[in-house]
Image (tube, rainbow, N blue to C red; front, side, top):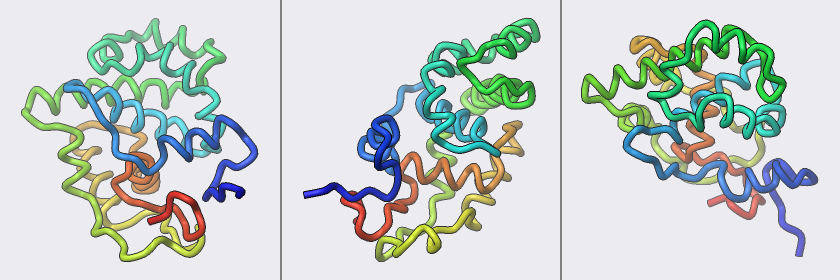
Length: 186
């Protein structure tokens, strides 16, 4: 029997991402590096296809110290210049600087006693009663993703617009947008 997926069929990397990661809650460490990685990668994806970022994910992990926020926050302007020559990532100064700035913003949240996971959960929408019929039934953003975007921007995050935050919410299982017919749809 053929496995039916929402997306990714035909590309082994994309299939694995769909089957094993997308829409699943993120088990994280106290420094929240896994959530930080998802936010950083979704920001890097802005204006590009997700498969582009997925194919560069290991390059990002190497370039950004496996998304350890404290290490990323220490990157300097010289590091930014070096990263702009790294073909393993999207070489966009604004996105690179945003990743570094977002690491600093995350550390500031932690110093203030806040956690990124709690902020995301506080902006989670009510679960749907059924899986969307098609991707046309899936919003690009929601009032909750807009509120999360504003909350993150208030804390100094960049490249966290409402569409990007909705994509992050999908990726980490805050919302379940597996469409009807997908073997993972609930």
